[in-house]
Length: 204
Image (cartoon, rainbow, N blue to C red; front, side, top):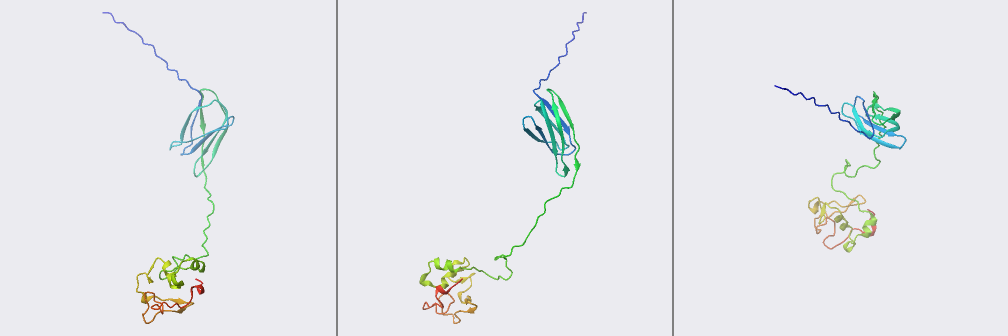
């Protein structure tokens, strides 16, 4: 019996490359920037969580600078790196922890109190200026009609209350219909359309 032994040749696979490679580790997750000073090209990548990084197909030549930055660490850099075709350059970088100094934040209170959250406010309130009073088309020039510019007032009823509970003050003095004879305004003389003062006398 004949046994034929044939030795199979080992095929060596060749890898072609069009540039160089830069790899390394920095110990922490960071941003790595490679700068080619000959062309001005910048390439920034993020490392793996353990700090490892690899940049393939880096054009041969240089000089190159490698910069590494991470929050809470002082930045590191390696300069003057020259690469040749097919080279795998390994960067050795160690980041040092550094306290981060934050810029100061100044908070100042406003000089004008919030009209909505004012502690002395107990109900709906709105100020109508004299210029707005002159521009608004008011029937019979009645200043009581200015109340309709407030959303909480309907038919001279403030916040849903009966108009007999309205309290109208003119320069701090009460101008109310104490007998309850007015027609839905709470102002005296409402039945006959009498006005306590002309609209032109209203400042706000």
